[in-house]
Image 1 (cartoon, rainbow, N blue to C red):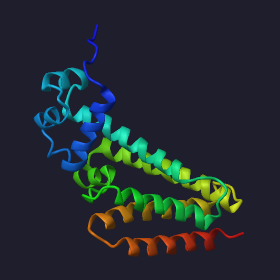
Image 2 (image 1 turned 90 degrees about the vertical axis):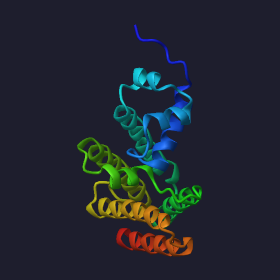
Image 3 (image 1 turned 180 degrees about the horizontal axis):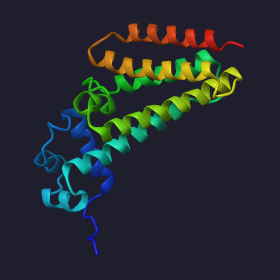
Image 4 (image 1 turned 30 degrees about the vertical axis):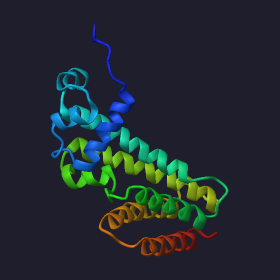
Length: 195
């Protein structure tokens, strides 16, 4: 019978996420994770099996949070342009909440480990879910079916721009410039989806 964990798992996973997010997978040794969390190496192995298994757990958790983030930004009752504006404003605000310009754990992991099949599957699934959520919101705002090709394409474009905004923020682009880019995408989506 497995032993009960002697640590708060949610707090532990938050601390591990922070470590991987700021230092990357390769830059985070098990001793670093142990020091950051106060959980001994042996307990880490017993609870999660390996650094890789622990990383995949927190990576899936983080990516699920990104899908939830899209849902939270997409309130009903907005028109197409305002739907896009609200989502992209939330992305920019999320970036600004990290003054160290750390970017996004998902995007950072693509840069570091994107050739790994499991990482690629997790990212592809996450982006698909983000695009579906966006398509649902845009379809509702435009009075169209969410499987409409124009809706699907607009949703993919908005999500792609959101990922680009994160990278541009990370390399020091000005928030006003990112806001202008966001506005152009909002107007373009509105123009394409206008009835």
